[in-house]
Amino acid sequence: MTLTRAVLSAFLLCAVLGGFALPANAACSDKKILSMSDEGKSVKAIAKACNMPAAKVRAVVESDDAGEDATASAPAPAPTVKKLPSGAGLASCDCQGTVPYGDKAPELRCQSGVSIATPCAGYCPPRGVAPWRRVCS
Image (cartoon, rainbow, N blue to C red; front, side):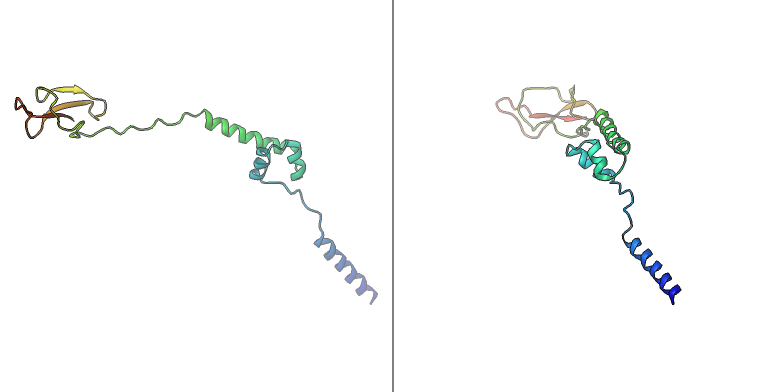
């Protein structure tokens, strides 16, 4: 009976101590460390709060700073400018004077870089000249 009581007492003691085990090194996640750093806490204060070495905290904070520097130094991609396709009108038909039809002129808004003068329906008083406009070639 004494042996049973001793074994039972030892078992209960182990169970109770197992339930109140000392906490392991409860390290904070990188996200938590970075949020604390953004709040203005020092590396030493973060290390103490997270129960981890200051060197690990410093490494996490510095790696984030290096990542931000790399993204900041990378140039942003230039916005792609959509140019007008062939046949797209550059202006509405108007009586702007006389122009030889088929006249080519440089135009940066067109994909080809060139525009052509084309006639429009109707006529312009008083001389009866047809209106025209430019379209991308």
